Structures are given as C-alpha cells and as structure tokens.
Amino acid sequence: MHPMLNIAVRAARNAGKVIIRSFEQLDKVEIESKGSNDFVTSADLAAEEAIIETIRKSYPAHTIIGEESGVLTGSDDDYQWIIDPLDGTTNFIKGIPHFSVSIALKVKGKLDQAVVFDPIRGEVFSASRGKGAQLNGMRIRVKAHKELAATIIATGFPHKQKQHTTAYMAMFTALFKKSSDLRRAGSAALDLAYVAAGRVDGYFEIGLKPWDTAAGELLVIEAGGLVTDFVGGHNHTSSGNIVASSTRLQKELLQTIRPHLGEALSK
Ligand code: 2AM
Ligand code: CA
Image (cartoon, rainbow, N blue to C red; front, side, top):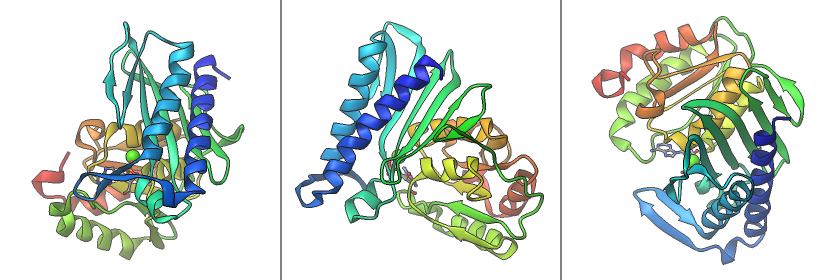
C-alpha cells in the first residue's frame, strides 16, 4: 500500500472510532446548525481533529482542507488533503447507521489517494492513482451497464438548495422511468464508493462540496468509471453537480437529464 494511503486509512479509522463512540451515546452529542438544513455535531469536529492529528504526525508540511476547519495551509502546498470527517451527518443525528469518513489526497492538483470508510460496516474503500480501487483489499470495479434499463441509480436530494427542487424532480422522473429504481441513502461519499463497487450503477447529485466527492471520485475512476458534471464536462468540483457511472452508461445518464437542467444546472 502507498505510504500516504496507509496514513489516510489510519486517519479514517481513527475518525471512525470517534464517530462510533458518539453514535452509541447519541443523546450526549451536541448539534449546531451551520445554515439551512446544514448541521455540525461534536462528533464531526472531534473526528476532523483526529484526522488532522494523524495526517500532521506524518506529514506536518501538507495542506489540509476540511469541511469543518477550512483551509489549513502547510508549507508544501503541492500536497492537499481534502477531508470530510462525517459524510451523512443528518443520518448520524437521526440514528440511521449509514455515514462515512472521506479522505482524499491531491498531489499538484491531481487526485492521488482516496479512502471512504464506513465505520458501521467496517468497510474501507480505497484507491491509489493508477493502481485501481479496493474494498477491504479486494479489487472492485464499476458495473458496465450499457443502458439505463435494469439499473439502480443512487442520488441525493438538493436539501440545502431547494431552489433546484423542480429541475431536480424532473431529472429524477426522467431517470426513474428509464431505470429499474433509485436510491437515496444520505452519504454522497458512500454513494460514489458504491458506484465504484458495482453496488449501484450510477449516481447524480446537485451542489456538493469538494470534500463530499474528492475521495469518491478517485474510487470511481480507479474502478473504471467516469465522473463528470451535468453536461459531461469536468467542472463538477466547482459546480458541485456530479454524475458518475460506467463509461458506457454515462452517455445515456447525461442525455436523460439534459432536457431538464436549465441554465443554472448546465455546468
Ligand atoms: P454532509 O453530511 O457532510 O452534510 C446528502 O445528500 C449528502 O450530500 C451528504 O453526503 C451531505 O454531506 C451532502 N451534501 C453536502 N452539501 C450538500 C448540498 N448543498 N446539497 C445536497 N447535499 C449536500
Ligand atoms: Ca459531506
């Protein structure tokens, strides 16, 4: 295993321990609102601290960009860790056991290492650039469906950007008619990991942040899939609008949502 991936996995497991401890005593978890339908808990903060501490111990000069801490610029900006200590905070708060820790490393602007860790199931999804993707050490690959018929598509609702509700529902309807079914599980990082593992066949969501998708993107790519924005371009990191699937299915996915995008989502 690449030494930096090894550190990423260690950091994710450390965060996972913090999260599980809090999940077992949910009544003691402090919840604060960051904005409309956006929450942070004492577990998010403690897990992010555990990740930063683990990375800093081995790589004190690297830059770390965290959902809760913002940008912690290091002296070596070629190395950027992008971390989401608890992806699926709403599930966590409600006691729904489906959330993850997401850690990605970019080297000179390119995704290089990735871990998405599900602490409930003990599943480590990992990838190193050019070396494929793994689930608990076993190679995973996206499912190579050619068409939407018989596929399961994962998604998330734009719960923090309800101005997109009408467009989103139109996209949802179009995909629902052509596919077998859709899933809305509540952790974007795990949705992408599940595309990589072939558990779902595709995924789309509006308005995500870089820490929700960085690790999952490398997982999908290394598992042989594609990640784009809603018009097939590569602005998904800035727009936060993301579509992921196999290279064969992506075309039909994009064609199906295209008529419903409007100007605001055509990026
Ligand atoms: P969070 O739990 O870290 O907030 C739910 O749809 C998934 O989307 C979660 O992974 C959630 O991450 C993420 N998410 C973050 N910002 C979002 C946004 N603006 N709109 C929709 N989903 C968002
Ligand atoms: Ca997140």
